[in-house]
Length: 128
Image (cartoon, rainbow, N blue to C red; front, side, top):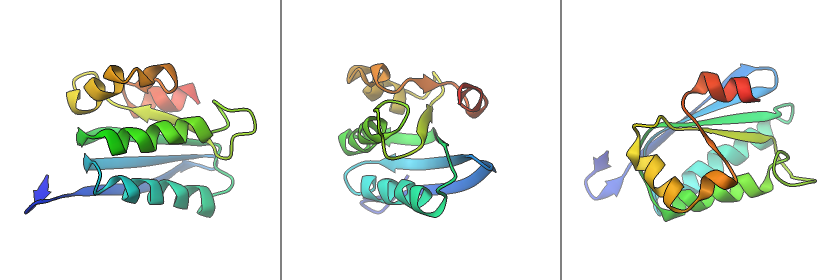
């Protein structure tokens, strides 16, 4: 989605249960919007200290640029599920197999080694 020459992205946050939050991302995650995504995720950490798992649903992402990849890879490296003494909750990513906008850059950069993608929110929730 574009508003003139400026890519747009929206982030919606919902509490799934006491310890799990689902963050739904729509639109383009690139140099201009990656910081917005990071800010939204950091707000989850700050406002919901009881959360032990964050599911990030990328099903509606239409473009995932290197800045967006960097934000997600950074999160994976900082979470408790991947780093001893990590600072945040476990992160689960969702991207359906038919979403090439996410799958292609994620697998090209071999990031599934540090943070695998789940087919849907339900399977990500089951893995937590």
